[in-house]
Length: 395
Image 1 (cartoon, rainbow, N blue to C red):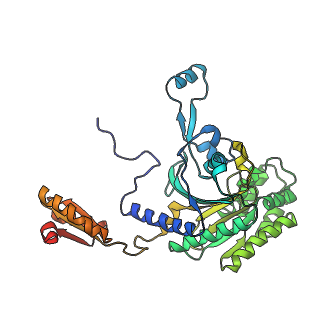
Image 2 (tube, rainbow, N blue to C red):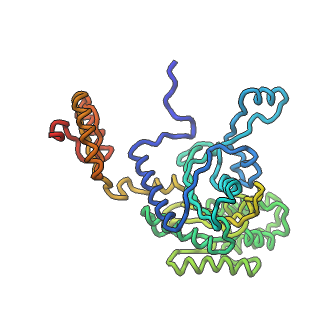
Image 3 (cartoon, rainbow, N blue to C red):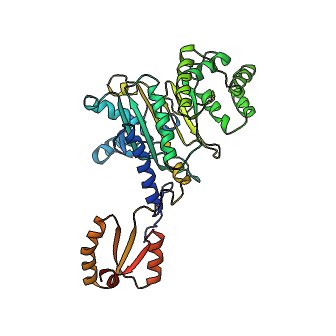
């Protein structure tokens, strides 16, 4: 029986010219990052489960695609009812980066500036605009403890978005330490503030009344909740003066460069590994953020390395690709297709095409289809400005 041709649920095929647009977007972004001194790395799609689990990746740890052990090891685990999986697909690029740095620490310059564009996987419920496989586009600075890291990451990310035609963005800033200080100032000391953060993270998607009701149902003092949400509505800074000053330092440095910035006390970011400043990029015409990140110091210590300062920013690659026009980067190289009737023409044109390609022209030598009109239409959809008969072209 024939197998169905659709990709696995939550996955998708990327067809031309969309695939070409994605390549151009990635190259534009990487060119900006290269100009700032970021080096490109690659990490494996699969990581040991003990790398991914316990990394404070929030709910994403529940969405790991796990890979079964193989052969005799799987049989043994089945017999004794043990853990059947020992590896998983990465759910982000931050945790693999920390492992990478710990593994190659002696060979890396410090600070180390790194760019990383690659697919990640999360076993979410597929829905419009959300897939189980998607691409992340990260930059990180390892080994820089000052706000110079935050400032440069935000600056480079805004510049990368501008280079792909997305302007008018705003950087929203907060600090996890100020967030916790504000919450505890109004709700008291909390051993596990994660549930409160999850509720507060909904403020940009639902009303403050709904968030207040959720916190009240969780047992928090209603008057305290009201004061907390009032503080957020007025964008008041609460917390240690030194941390406030650090956040203001990032804010001022970005404003000096003409970047729109605002303090967002309700900004949470879903990952539990953030330790300091956090940020997102928003656009006035869009209901979602285009990029997000923050400081996550010390993650390398999980892998036996020193607890290095680390800070990163990730562009939502799928989201920005949806915003970029198909011809946003101009016509690119000239593309011509040469159609050949027989093997002799095909071989002759393949030889002649080499010189044309050396001159910068895309030359696609193909056998002429029976339906010439359809072949021409198909090639024109792929951006070929000319479709030429081999006899005419070879002269």
